[in-house]
Image 1 (cartoon, one colour):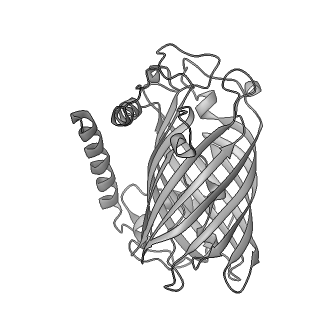
Image 2 (cartoon, rainbow, N blue to C red; image 1 turned 45 degrees about the vertical axis):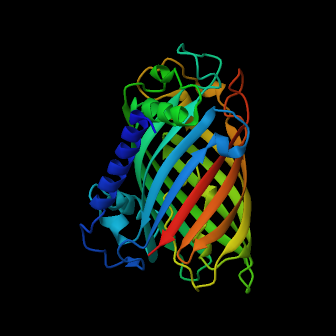
Length: 353
């Protein structure tokens, strides 16, 4: 392994370890909130890549990496966004049975031709986001409805994305990306996003072999949109329906708590779903306040985007699961080379304590 790759991997480990070590209790729990996940109740690591979808394409949403922790340590850690998230949520919901999550991650987008160092004005722009997010799931008293929300802050356009992307390509022996100097908000620009979703469990058979739920979501920030989704899982499962939320994914997995199984039997199930989004703003295509070498106006992006996904979850060890998801999304641009559908795959490993 090359020295550069070692440095990149070491940096990722150190940053992740520092963030996890900061997730220590820092405030008292509100009397109106019933937290059922004490300490660090679970950890999830996710890697997305378009190569996981088959073929050799390296474009559009090319990949992402995220680490999520669950429990009151996720709520109370240093620099936690949960106090702000709780205040905003209080305008819309009343806390009941609240589960907490915190996520740290990086996502990247590229045009189809990554060998050119020149701006490609007929394709999607390079873009990246390094982010930190807090999430909540608030389950209704009857157990058939839930609210989920998240607050995310991050930085667009950091040069470290180019270094990490190049290191991965060096590792697999492919051409490094040459155009990150032209990415959205190149040099760095802060950004943020708030999301709120309402979930309803439609079908839950007594044998716990199938459930179906619907979700309506809205968000304001670097992605401003509304959406409606339906998702289903079939097989053998014993985790709560609200903890399974592929419909909240916007490129990388949302900060959803890692739930404990209700019995020790191993899980194995298939899942699928679909989502339609009405999008008003996408910073990864339109940029923010800073000028970018390649960016698009609202009239050039698709206002309606559809997604479909299919995947599988299985047990690795007694407290550890692995899942694979294949995602399809319709084009986000109306014309040019960037007006194409996108595919990517995601692998998640989750562990309960």
